[in-house]
Image (cartoon, rainbow, N blue to C red; front, side, top):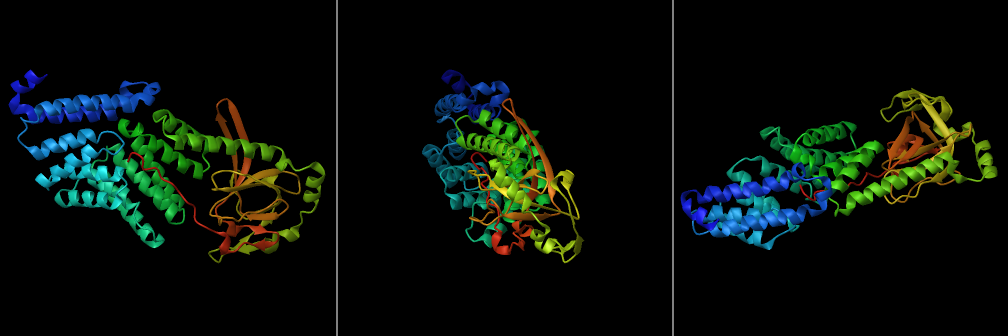
Length: 438
């Protein structure tokens, strides 16, 4: 190898660049060349390729005249793994000192800072790179960093909005780049949870993830499948969420978060199915007493045949049993029932309980944006206007989970024991968007 390199001294920089490009191609297209059962070995295999590349770079060191470019390639090689490498940081820091206009070195240095959890320094690197040249890598990395800045809620929302716009710019520079689409999806997902859960934003998020999935590199990123499953879970698209969490587990077997989320969701579906099927496992005599106690008086402000919506419109209401609900939105209808149980889960979103109506029909109820520490208890009477009904049927590991449910976007729509809940019972959702390998 050393003799052939010396023989091509004039092309030494190109040989070095090609070797580093080949290393990143090996990492990014690993699962196109290897089965998923080798996922556990990916980091080890990439590390071996990294060492080979470093060995070649060492042999070329004296022949590469542009020392800034050489140091950038050396640092980029050491930066190929997901963990922080001090050697990469040192090489890249020296590279940008020798050539402050070397954009790729700034981008790689910013990634080093990001891996070392120095968000402010990472932001400075990506901003500095953009001052020299507009490029998709700096844009999408800056989008990622901005979502981690700010403690004040108003300031944080402002940064997330900026993150969305910058991610859009990255996509516009290369609409075929799946990684840029993935970053845009993450920006939309953060914005969705930070700004009132607008369903249109969630649809934009999922469209971006779908575009990302078409790119073989992004499709092999476990974060894509994990984050999209978070969105699916919020939508109560449980089957798709389970598929995504499973895919993330397969792509990164050592990453515990998707494994934990998968187990939590399966446990949740199992509990809800059991409690709905057995009407909260309330003893028969007590259950009958609860059912008999249900009366129109518990409809409270919904008992007069109409109610005033948050827009000030008068909406007619017809009290119907749960059995008469259609799948989807049931406009101008109201249902009433007794709480027979709440579902104890690790993830507090959504708050879930089961209720039976006067006919003895039992539905699960999922309530979003509920204040921490608040929830209904067994024996409470709950009225829900214009309910959104769903049939949930999920298959996983040979088991079927099936139950009917009502989705409530805000507790302020509910009437509990004849009284409408106030704004103090509402709180925004809290989301953790993975940025493990953005």
